[in-house]
Image (cartoon, rainbow, N blue to C red):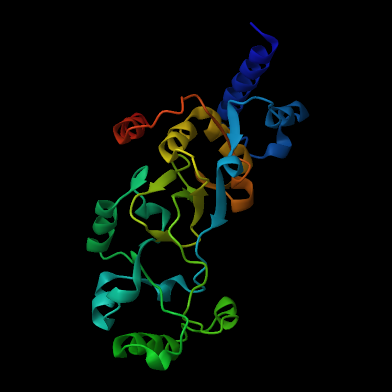
Length: 263
């Protein structure tokens, strides 16, 4: 075996060992032996960072999720359909490794706040009557009060809204979730937004993430709140490694679905 291959194998085996160690409640990286830190410096082309293939941002900071995340009932009552966007409001609203129109429709039909009220950055007086009514009742009920809302020219206009290529859930339970956006949906700051660089095969990136090695890195870089809850901060998420073990060929959607079934 070549020296480089031996080093890579040693690192991989060490990571797998760490994964099972952390399953025994050893979550804090500072409690691990100093030699473990060397694993994070792997000079091997099989490992890349999220920041090597994408731009990672926090989700949308609405300033008041209760007001801006609306149900279909609210949309119909105030005639908001022209200014709403498909929304993943919480981690539990993502059901698989793809977020599709069908998934979103399930959330809407359940009465979940699955739409984002995205009002234009313009004077309220020019809004349709229903839009004015919704904002006025928000003011009357104190929904317009808040630090971030007070910094805006128009409190009801949310900045930095765009549909990303994928979502990385900030709060995870069973396992860390990396979800491709097949709907042009948006998310609140309960998730991180990922935009892949040009030429990156997003399905290949998805498959490359779902493995024990990456899960181990994720757990070491994340923060545990106990009870099986893992939080991954945006700044930390840029550091996450994952194993590239596939060719540059396009990956069929069916292959990705098979991986989810295995998980």
